[in-house]
Length: 544
Image 1 (cartoon, rainbow, N blue to C red):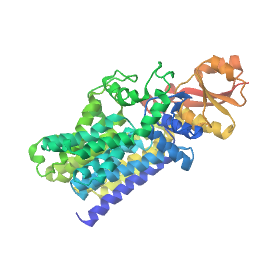
Image 2: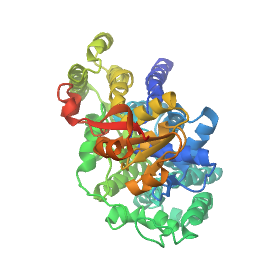
Image 3: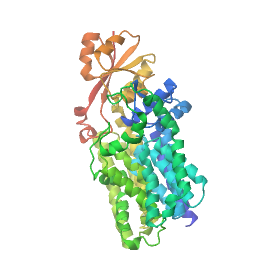
Image 4: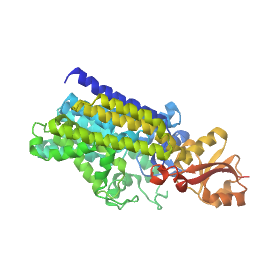
């Protein structure tokens, strides 16, 4: 591999990272991102890093590390959207670094760079810069654990400690199931290559022991908040064990759909989710998977490839069989998908290269047309994005020679164009309809001493984050009656409650806000002409 090619891929990686930066300065999206941000905010305001509270009540769902990382960032940069998003962004880059190191060690430096490039430029990773949840952290921690355990497998013992630390971090983000993508690939690799003695080697049992030592902070916090207080009402009942929920209900309970949090599974869900989440690489990936079923295409690949494939396959199968499915789960195995795709791209030549050149061109054209249509019909500034699209077309024309390098460059141009559209036009426009964020900002600017509160609405997480302090929730008018005489009390409430507040409490409307559930976009909302039909109204009111 020559220096010029190395430099090219590094420049492209830097470009993708650079165009992702503006997303750090956008708003925090409901529901999950705003919920997690408000939890971390409460940790800082209460100076309590053990107990997790939502709307003033004990909350049992996710482990603590996501919130600890955000709260630590709040301590440094203040409580704001940038501080919440920054750790996830940095850990995403760290994940790309580990992906490069793993693919480089197993295959080559070229494979490592292309894998990192594919990973960072895939659509769902780009979207995750806006809608920051827990999955980017899990992806990085599981990948780091796999890399260090791979090095430990080669005989360097200190990597056992590092691998176990990162595996423990992944557990403290999502739960015990993350050990499946971490260890599953190794176990199947050892079985298929008849390395049965690996299963008995002390270092791997030491690794398991270290993981349980490293997750003690999480176990301690759960025990303090829940197991020591069986009188607390959680999920509508008392006697709920935080430790049992952590080890069983939050993981296997969701898989078997017999825990407190349920869903509806569809075995094909992640097949079509991958199709859009891994754009613009998804068609190449699916072809690469089919290609691997032919024995001749596996000749010459290192035996450790089994570890990559099976880690992704068993996790994908687990997700598909689960009754609780969400699109962002696929992020956890995108590094493995990136490696599989990178290997296939490097083998493209002749007719197959020409076929995918035109396939990827069609994908790019479809995405650009979608951007134009969305921009025009949504009135989100699409006409102003036309010059950028023209520059993209010109840039693509500069790389018109059919070869693998230009195929990669054109795909990155496609990803960069989509990211610029999302970060500079689309999401800033859409977020104006997140009324909780808009109301919280307005209240902070115009009534900085207000006692923020919410009446009869359970999901105002963005208001929780953006309003000053920790807003008070009123679940009934009896609750409101107890506090209606509080000084500077200002209430955030849906339109359904406005008439009663005006009649019975002489409420004064301070400001109205349009609302739409922006993570569930529909054609009616996208179309500016039909948008008013799907908008709801929320109000900030003051009681006299």
